[in-house]
Image (cartoon, rainbow, N blue to C red; front, side, top):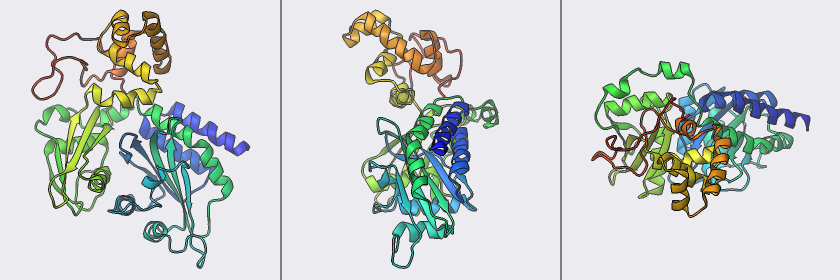
Amino acid sequence: MRSAQRLRAGIHDAASAAADGAQFREFVMDVLGAFIPYDGGCVAPVDPAVGVPTGFTTRGLDDPAEVLRLSIEFEYGPDLDPDSLYALMQHRSGVRRIEEPSGRGPGYGNRRYLELVSHLGMGHEVQLVFRDGDRRCWGVGDLLRASGRGFSDAELTMLDDVLDDIANGFRTTLIRHASARTRNTVVEGTACECSGPAVVVIGADDEFDSVTAAAMIFFERLGWESPARGRPGPAHVIARQVRRTRPVPADVRVRTLDGEWLVLRAAIFDETGRVVMTFERARLPEIVALVTAAYGLTPRESEVLVEVLAGRSRNEIASRLFISPYTVQDHLKNIFTKTGVNSRRSLVSRLACTEYMPRFGGDLRPDGWFDESGTRTASVEAHTLG
């Protein structure tokens, strides 16, 4: 019992201390290893709208690229395996154990063990799905141990008890600043210097058929592996998911290391199974649901927030939402508390990126971006959507 309490406290401390989501994942791997030792492991953030990982943090794995390749083959093959993490996302439980076979006992013939766990030189695995109280999935994870060192029932119970704490850590650190060191190490000025479409085409063999210069820059800013033959990454995960769900395209919201929100759009390109992806700077309507969920706002508070970002007064908001001005003020107080600000101006600063100033409800230019001319602006004091 005391160990479980200490584990939960460690997760809470990690969520409080982390400067951003990437650092939180590193802290989580440290904390889990202190209480539930493992030989290898991985945690990944997930866009809850589409259920695909958008980055990876690994520990104790000799060849992370090979691990990712094997995982993609198993998790996102043409047929959904019941032992996949993606399938576990659909279950009520967020913990599952894959054990080393013992003769023809438990685990004998388990496809995941045969095709993934044993290929990594491991004998036991625990799969983890991190969901919040509203059942939104914010991340997934794997812990692995060598042969002969299985995970106990007590350890699985400890993990199950902190799944929602880890999910809330993923959720809250998603909207924190990237560290100054990270922002300063991103290729300076490249986002502005390179023009043209950011397009990637991934072939049916999962090799990059085409990558534009602008897309290369976005790969760097996301911290993804540079597109290269035989180097799997998050783009391949998204491509596999699109092939599985064809003809339904996927819109995935991702955040660069320097704190800008992007939308990656992916769809089947032709009958051969090639997938085309484009990167675009996100507009407020495309990320507001993610951001409000990350702050834990209620649906009504989210509606009030959108109206605030549109520059409307308390009375205007009340009229548009058919509520009283006093109710609007109550919602604003709750929003201020949850987002850690004390005024409208601070709220706009907290939620607006300096890369773009959303003019929600305003005119759009022919390229689909917000028209800066003739629209009401708000003062942005800091780059704080992160």
